[in-house]
Length: 172
Image 1: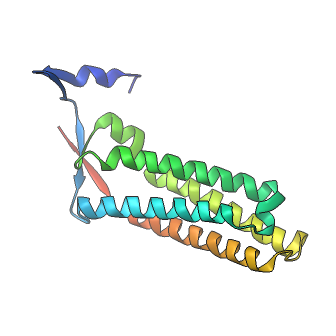
Image 2: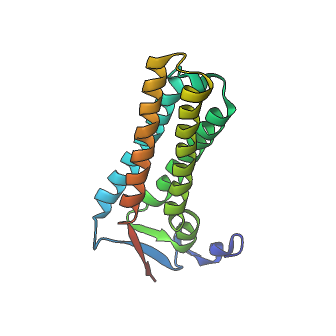
């Protein structure tokens, strides 16, 4: 879709503009819309708060190692963008215009997989730093940090599995 091509699909009715183009509606054959919204918001906010919590833990890799800090920072930014994408598709009462579908909903699984890759990179970097470079300088904080990272990876994996249940179908 060309830039702002969708504007032609809005028509004025009274004082409001109403979208008359193609839309996608939520397919409730596998999961209800209300349940899907709770799942999307629940997983994304849980991930976000776990990542923020991980940043507050003074584990040895998070203090001074770029190969731990860089993927962690990218994961936090991507999760923030994920919340924005979910906000744009979950607050539309089960109907979204085709340009929203293409922009936000279509690539949601792939986007979460990218988050999984960076979360795994953070975990691997922390483990490498903790056990190879600096043998457990702060063992309790490092153990808690690695535990948080393992939780983030597991939750992201289950998030991908739950997003697979969410389907949209074209509605004109």
